[in-house]
Image 1 (tube, rainbow over the protein chains, first blue to last red):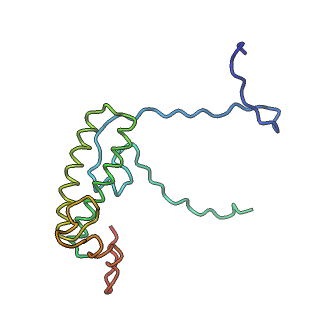
Image 2: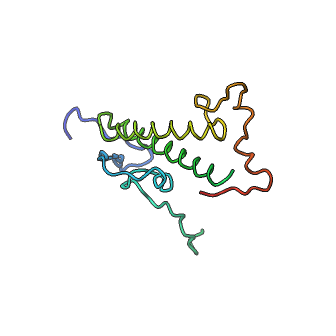
Image 3: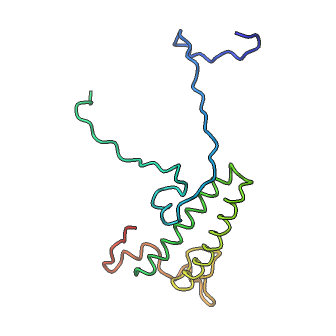
Length: 64
Length: 93
């Protein structure tokens, strides 16, 4: 490792010293937006940001 | 609350929501003229429709058009929960 590089942060309980995750969020481009009423129903006026957020289906047999 | 009032309120809510979403976009794109133009357009639409709503049904803002000439209509007009009185059902939108 290069001299002067910041050392990765380690959890003292772990010898392996994993590198922490780094988030990257791309810049959102401008584009056509929903009409206000549709935007309100969808939770955003920006089509690329629509997510269904469906409730997770209950799975059998996964309880401890 | 009759259907016409409900519809108008929904339009106000949709415009306010759109303005918040554009607000968030503009925070990270302060020079986006498209977003800025749409923000101004929606703001004008909101002010117009909110003013009309308040003239008809009473104030829903303290800086709007419905505070009344001779009485403090903010306190006198029905509150949102009054729509539940008299057996009126909530209208899910």
